[in-house]
Image (cartoon, rainbow, N blue to C red; front, side, top):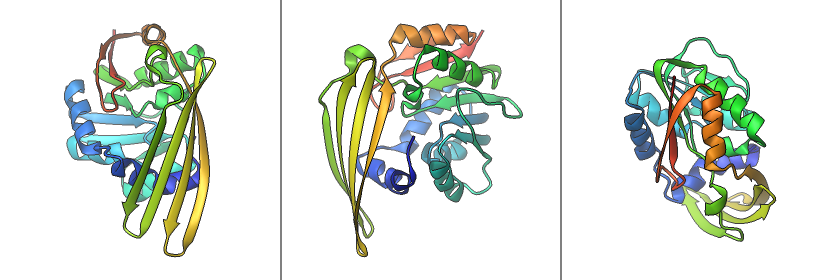
Length: 232
């Protein structure tokens, strides 16, 4: 889970690395086939949700990190944003589309948690609704030892981000070092994430447990594909 330091620079960093939230949101809405109500699970700082709000009739968000949620609330006044855990949540109402993007699903630790989260998401679908989930890498696609490095300038702030990914059993360990330079000083901090390398079959089994028929679409926003599911 991202802390306060990462939450402050998260959007600037990823936008600077070329992430196009508007194009990704438009693609997801097109795949879902609905511009009605939408719930974004693990909405983070609300960057995708802000774009969904321009495309859909009504949007809401759910996020576990209070630090990320604080950024989202500042960005999206008037949009219902809920503090909650994807592994088990209950919100009033049902939605035409439920999304879980940017591989947030990979932060679940095992198949039981995966099934619980997808069941909770599917339970918030309106009849005929669509669930869109962006997975983390499948085990056969993960590259141990992968290094990424970027320098991003945003206003008076310069951000250096260097990450290193290793294999730790059935998990990927992603260590991210940040250096943030501003006119009033320089600070650095470290984020470490253990992200589960679920197999495609494990995702599909969890969707089946959640009562969904699912298709897998290659590509997706980050090259890791998308699962498009509908409740049976």
